[in-house]
Amino acid sequence: MLKTHKNERNGHFARAVQRLKDERRYRVFIDLERDASRFPTALWRPDDGEAPRDVTIWCSNDYLGMGGHPAVRAAATSAADRHGAGAGGTRNISGTHHRIVELEEEVADLHGKEAGLVFTSGWISNLAGISTIASLMPNCLILSDALNHNSMIEGVRRAGCEKQVWRHNDVAHLEELLKAADPSRPKLVVFESLYSMDGDIAPIGQIVDVAERHNAMTYIDEVHAVGMYGARGGGISERDGLAHRIDVIEGTLAKGFGSLGGYIAGDSVVVDAVRSYAPQFIFTTTLPPMVVASACAAIRHLKESQVERDGHQYMASVTKHALEAAGIPVKDNPSHIVPVMIGNAERCKAASDLLLRRHDIYIQPINFPTVAIGTERLRITPTPRHTEAHVSYLVEALVDVWKTLELPFTSARILPLRRKAPVVDCVYPEMRKAAE
Ligand SMILES: *Cc1c(COP(=O)(O)O)cnc(C)c1O
Image (cartoon, rainbow, N blue to C red; front, side, top):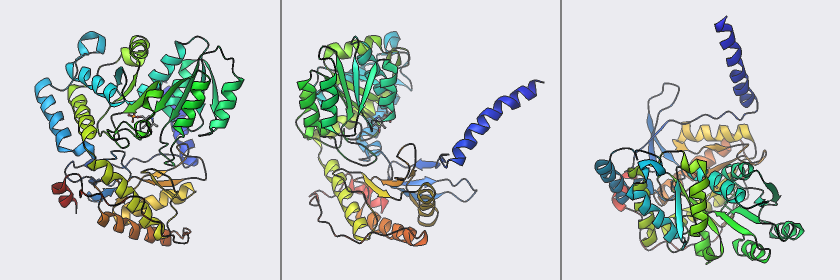
């Protein structure tokens, strides 16, 4: 009897998973063992019993390779030795350790804001930040870019107030919506600086102009730009000299900074309100000192060092250039993201499988719902730890895959390099050598 009930219940889950398989949306994870000294090389354990082997990762969001940076690793290990594994509590109950206090000062300084607040992830910081800020403004209207990340959409949903979606990066549409709204009503404009799937960059200056004209508060997600853009790694808003005109800047510690966690930075009173009201902040244990120390070390390093940013832009430019010259369809953009368009879920998966199994190159296929149907792609993320040798091998492998799967080549274009080669060779040459 009991057994039948259990079978019946499990049937729901089996059918739910089957639906995803039928829609070609079922996700298969690749079992990797990252080796800090050899990044972007990692050990892959195939799920079919084949022997583990080295592959080159070309789709990591550890964009600058900071996860393996010697200073970052040293900060993590020494904090683990001194303070142990965990934080020991929530922020309110014994979990406010000195390392997180330092980190919050560091992120506030990074963006030139009065205060910072750290969460367990960037996803949580958007959920908590957007929902709490909007819900504390009576009758708030949220204006959200159409391509905002899932964490922002969830934040908007949880706020429980009215929302309007403006066409992606369409400032005229945003202004139209702002104009139509009651002028006395509080408004929150939420958007990203750098959209990670197409690699396009928001017209932040124009958005801020429009928001200021209509007395709207601005909230920007700089997740794919912090550490990587701006003279101190403060993101596109720093690069464009606009950070002081944006009310709340949200970022992650898990991508450019190579660690884990997320944050918001803004006026003290806003940060204090989120600290005091957001359940996603209050009722969960603080990030451990070793994680916090590693993030802090990465931020501090990237405030001073330009080498990683230069190497990153250079490798992204070289990769785009080489792929375009070979007739591989790269979607052009002004950032470090290299989207190679396939436009079909099965073929995208097949290309990824071939790259991995035949060429030891790992690039996860990006399918719906992460991107729209018909725009399936391989999203390539070069890092300063990739070398020109890596790039030329990647090009050969992709050409082979294109021929094998009979994917259409574009007519080869030779584009000028956008960036000059950086003067300094790479992040940490001793490790780069090992990778080659
Ligand atoms: C990855 C991502 C997040 C979430 O950050 P995590 O630290 O990985 O939780 C938020 N916003 C955008 C745009 C992202 O791509």
